Length: 196
Image (cartoon, rainbow, N blue to C red; front, top):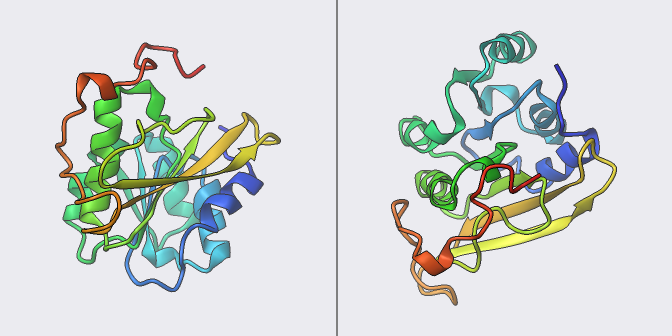
């Protein structure tokens, strides 16, 4: 098993998280744990980690490595429901989920659903193997910011940070998680293999 998230990329993800902000830090698709390790190195205590991973072998490995963390074996797209059931709203969500394998509507629902269940102002930090945003932008009520490309990763990648826009801000009111994409919002990369 390997993790396509190299150390420099994992540190760039962790740098977008405020370790002093209270609440769980949720990791979608933690793999063998490069992002979780970078978060712990950045100052997030392991007991605050909620690691959502579908592969049972990886879950077992993550439990051995961070016994204080909460490891949940489920699909990353179930995260919004799981976040709503946490005792405390999430302080941040980080994701290595290969979003481009799903239609734009499902990607948007994942990001918005997680952000609506998290603390106000919480970031959703996403690793993308493509230079443009995996969430169709611009989008009313959602802000996106990209970091530079990481060329020396196993596969070149970019880190995107999404946040809900504040009410009354330039972007307007935050959309609900079930907002539908209009036909003209759908990007042309919803075909299988379009992110390769």
